[in-house]
Length: 489
Image (tube, rainbow, N blue to C red):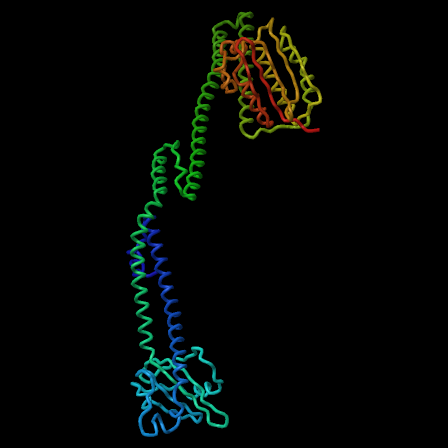
């Protein structure tokens, strides 16, 4: 592209406004259509006028007196000229088969001489049979450059030399009529464009109001207010669909940002709680070590007491780290070693271990056998141990009752752990599965809990395409139920 072309195109920028672009495009398209209609009108009108004029001339040429074809010319016996009812722009001429051409200008009193074609063209016409008037014509260019509309009649008779009668008329008056009609069409088209411009601008402005509204809403959203929504009932189907799509996108973005904020807040609380959980046993261990270093190590009784306490705290740290690693694995892509397991038999095998954990508490088992699921057996044992240990922590050692039941509910297996402990207050139920959350921190601390057991239980249940629910009445105990998909027989 040359520098001159770049400068020229740089001066004519497309309008930035959508309204102006639509207006310019509409006017250009309408102008192009009007020009196309004008061209088609010129071609059709020209052919129509020429054909009609040719039919009239064919009728005139058949009414020419026969004596005009003879050398006697167009005169009566007394010498008077026989009038031919032809206008001054009409010419008559005869072409003979021998190649002679006779202009009848004197007989027709034409203002111009008859134009002549080549002998080849006339001889070609002589070979044609005479036809009825049909509007066939030819355009001939005279020696002075003027254009003539010509029709022909074959005068051949059997046994006589063949002749061709030619009648022409100048096309300038016909073109003037056509151009006049085109001029009228052009004026009307310009008036229509102007009227369309005046009517189209308000209609276009009204049509683009929904887009303007969406633009203002987008500016508000750009300021950080993701709760703004586009209006979806604006009377334009396409705009309404676009608004619905944008609203869906904004809703997903709002949920994503909300989840991100919640995740960051949970991560902050998680880091703070984990630090606190790790700091507490480490502080105890550090304190016992200081005591030992100050001379308590020489006292055998104090030494073994401190070592036992440090060993307990180390076990707490180890359990906390293992739980954190397990949650991290469950949050990512949990690797489950699933296989077909009969849940009743799995719970039955765990009865001795659970009774040991229960101590003097009464333990009741209500197991339906034959329920088969595709699960990781080690993870399901972890779930049952977590729920059972939680029930042990919140029930009295002497009067506590823990009931474990397993039943099929439709296509799900329901594993329930119910206790008669202190229960859970309603305000704690929505957060009971959150990490490091404790409804009774003092009691949990007494039994060494970290607040991760129920979180792990929920993560394992969800990894098996199941869920865990809780219901509780304060003072009457709590009921935890794990639902797992069953295998069909």
